[in-house]
Length: 528
Ligand code: FAD
Figure: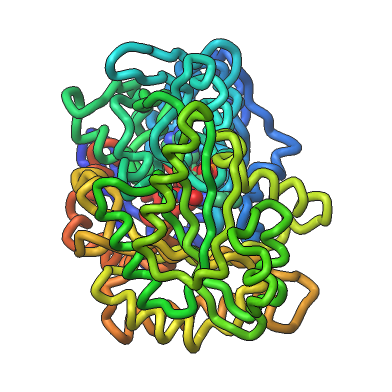
C-alpha cells in the first residue's frame, strides 16, 4: 500500500527522515505513545479526555472495522478541539498521533476511527440552547456539527421551518453527512445537503478556528463540504431552511421493467410541477410484497392488488411524496392524480398513505427500533453505494439487477436519479461526468453465523463482482461514501480533482493528522 507523504518544508531547523515503513520504528513509537496521555492530561480544557472504556469509538455501523484509539476527547467548547489539534500539530511529525471526529459513528469501514489516535466525540458539543434559528426572508439555523439531524428538525419545526435536503435516516450528525454529501429523494430539487449550507466554522489540521463561506475563506468552505473530514473538523454549520410542510402523501407503485421505471423517474425529476421526494427500489424474489405494504399503505384498488403476485419476479418500486397542508388536501389529491396519470406503472400496484412530515422523514428510525428489538441492527453492514451516469444505467441494470443480484432479502437496494445542476462542483464531492446520475445503494446486512447467501463473504463477493463489472465495462461509476485500499485507487476516484484535493490537504492539514480512517493520506513520521 502506498501513501502520499506530506512534505513539511516549513518545519525549520528540524532534521527528519520521512519513514514510510512504520514497522521499522515500532520501538520509538511505543515510547511516544507512553508519554502521550500525560501530555494530553496537561491541556487546559472545558471538557475532558477519557483513556479507558473507549471501545465505543472503535465501532461503527458497518461493524467490520475495530481500531482502538488512545484517547477520546469529550469537548465542551470549540476551543477544546482547537487546543487538542494544535497540540498534536505542534508535536510535529515526531509522533504518530492522529485525530478523527466521530459524529454518530454511522460510517461503514472505520472512517471515523483512529488507531492509537484521538477521537473527538462531536456529540459532546451538542444540546442545550446551542441551535439558533433565524427567521425572515431567507431563514437558516446555526447548529453544532455534532447535532443529529432529527434534533435539527425538531428545533426548526418550533418556528414552522425545516431544512430542505435530507438523508433517508436522521440519526446522523450534521458534520458527518456534510463530510460526505447527504443525498436523499429531495436532492433532485434542492441538491444534496452540502448544497444547502451557507457557512461553516472549521478547526483545521493546525488547530486554527476558521469561519468560512462562499464569500470568506471559500477554498476551505468548498474543500470541507464532501471533504471526507480531510481538511478540518466542522464545529458549526449554518443550514438553509424553508417553511415546513405539515403532512405528506406517500405513494408507492411498481414497475416490471427497468426501462419504463427509470424513464418515469427521469421525467419526474426534470418536470417543473412534480413530487417533493422521488426515490426507487429494486425488489427481487420477495413473496407477499403488496400484502406487507398493507400494514402502512392503502391500495387504490384492493381487489386487483390482492391478485398481484410478486414471488420470483424482479420489480422496481417508485416511491414518491407530495407535501400538503390539511386545508388544501383536496387540490393536492387532484394534482397527484394528474401526475400519476402520466406514469406507466402496473395499475393494480398503486398504494398510498398520509403521514405527518416528521413521521415521513423519520421513517427509517421506525424500522431501526424493530431491528433493534430483534437484535438485527448491530449486524455487519457491507454496504455499497454507487453513482452511475445516466447513459450507462440501462447496461448497469441489465447486468447487475438482471444477473449479479440474486435477491434483495439481505437489505434494500435503492435506485434513483439526481440532477447535477443542483450540485456545486467546487466542493470536494466527486460526481460522475454527466448531468443526470443515479444513486444505487446496496444496503445489505450480513448474518455472522451464516455460510449462505446472507453471509458476509457472499455479500462482499457480490459487491466485488458489481465493482469489477463497472470497471471492466468502463461505466464511469463513482463510489459514494467511498472506500479504497490504495492511493492509486483514490487518485482514480478523484480523477482531475486529485491535484486540488492534495493541494487543500497540504494547506489545511499538512501533517495529515485528520480522519486517518478514510485511508487517503498517512501521517508522515520523522526521526529527529
Ligand atoms: P461518522 O460516521 O461519525 O463520520 C463520518 C466521517 O466524517 C468520518 O471520516 C469522520 O471522521 C468525519 N466527520 C464526522 N464528523 C465530522 C465533523 N464534524 N467534521 C469533520 N469531519 C467529520 N447518507 C446519505 O447521503 N443519504 C442517506 O440517505 C443515508 N442514509 C443512511 C442510513 C443509515 C441507516 C446509515 C447508517 C447511514 C446512512 N447514510 C446516508 C450515510 C451517512 O451519511 C454516513 O455514514 C455519515 O458518515 C454518517 O454520519 P455520522 O454522523 O455517523 O458520521
